[in-house]
Image 1 (cartoon, rainbow, N blue to C red):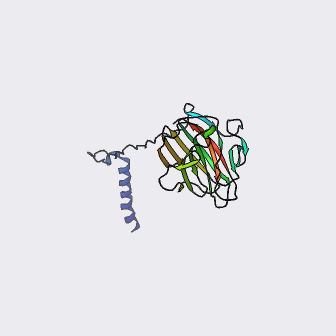
Image 2: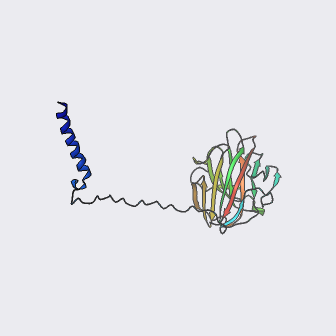
Image 3: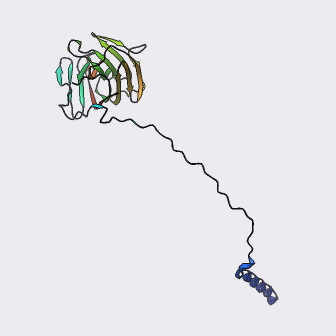
Length: 246
């Protein structure tokens, strides 16, 4: 019984081995079309607009405030003081509602001014104002010019000062809420453009105001600070100043 079972198995195994040893025994299919690979569309990378950085040709003046002889006002006055700290410019006010400012010695006409500004010491309710003065006048018209300010409690204003009177260039209230303003003792990046009659104020990359006014065509640059809370003082620090041509 066992031999009768083994013989067919042996013959079958031999037949399979013979087929494996004889390539002619394997017949490949014919007339099979070649495999077509799907064609992928090319990946198109988006083209981003170039980031404009100040260059040697358009920068009028830049300052990291490491050199106390770089041309900014230094002084102690009845309303406060201005001067250089360790890598920053400070404006300190000791009287309520007095716009203390330090002025740069350079007189310019059309300019883009940018600076990092921070409230360093202030009343607990952050009732302050600080920022950039563009086209600041001197001599008998001292204090006149365009005032671009933010407050420690989250507001902004744009005013033209003439003869001791501040006139708002905003429609509505002269101080308006501004969500881009980082409140308290934080750094805010301010950019002011004074180009011909065109004026623009940006806070942390957001345009808060753009409009036109022809009161002043040139002047100096000032960095200012004020406290609007009774019986309080305030100090503000400025860093990374750049003035460039529009």
